[in-house]
Image 1 (cartoon, rainbow, N blue to C red):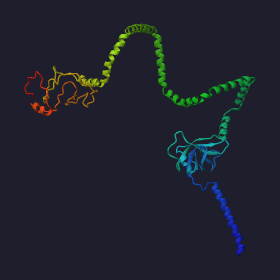
Image 2 (tube, rainbow, N blue to C red):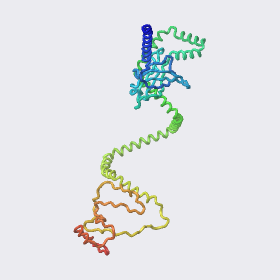
Image 3 (spheres, one colour):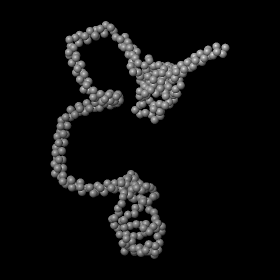
Length: 397
């Protein structure tokens, strides 16, 4: 019993092993044990020969395969892809997708191409891509040819072909020469095809711009016609004006030519003055801007002058010879104060200390002045005396 049962059991095990090997081979062939990432491509159509297991390529290198194809409710084809996860880092998220084939009869494949400005993000699982182009197939060509032939009337086509036959009859040499000349013409313009292609691409934008400006262009053309008519009507006056302009130019040429050296010397003499004005143009602008409020102030309704008088604290008196007037002020432009050029109401203008022989705040006393020359000499050393004509009362010194 044991020997009779061993042989069928061995045959059954052998059959199971063979079945498992075949199933494993089929599974491996279909990529069932290969890890993949799902991606979906939406296309207007999948093509006639787009089957599961079709190749998915990136720049000609296979990176995955097609798993299934579904039809959406909007008529588009949803092509489900299985992408090798090791290749995801090579595929940008904005990759362009084409449904391509080697020939019009060949099997379809998915071709991925990196755009001119690839995204920094990579393709991810579950992402949906839009197919930008589907290769034209022979059935599409036949369909369009059938629609064209269906719209042609046979009798008219026969008449047209007969007319063409009569036109070409006996003119083979001329037709051949025409084709040769046309070929030479195409060869001459071939180097300019890139420029022509660029011009054709830019033509829609240019034509749209002209279309938007058509009304203005017509107005310009109408105005140009009126202007031309006006010039024709006033041609005698225009001739007189041109003759007068020629005479004026001759006189001006004589005046300028005769005084050329004097004008040149004058311009050279003006250079220092213009340089100073250029250096202090901000100061001039500050002074003129400060007078604008005075210019805009309306005149008084009462005769006379209106003044605002107030009492201020005394300031340091002039001393001899320290405070003798002199012209030695130098330095950069001084119109950077927040109060200039328009001094706020009730606010004194800023005082600029320069080398002009006077500085009322030399000793820093901003209050009521007392007879304090002795204290000043003690603090600052000997100081100059008062002016020679200073027979004044109530002042220090």
